Length: 101
Image (cartoon, rainbow, N blue to C red; front, side):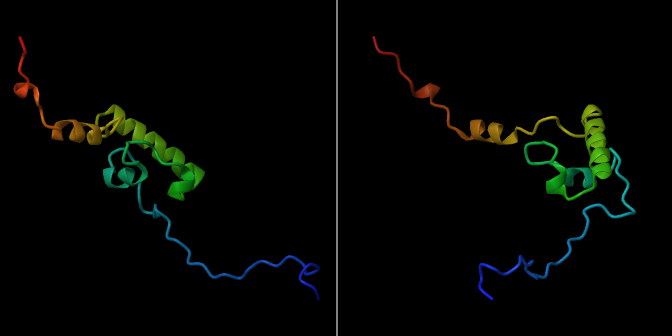
């Protein structure tokens, strides 16, 4: 049989099933900071469901918990620490300037 006339076949690659990020015993709550912090990016954004590999119901609960934690000041709305670190590390040269007459 020619390659062009072969029926489509799926490749039989083996894959390792990943463990779910949320176990059945974990409670999705705004007080559970160790769990919530896994679903937030470095910038402070909520990661998408596809990236998190959670169900739709779990993603909704995570989003609500993160928003509650932000309102109660347990989490920052934005994480801009990188900007501040760069601005603080630059040396000041205002004292070296001299005025010409």
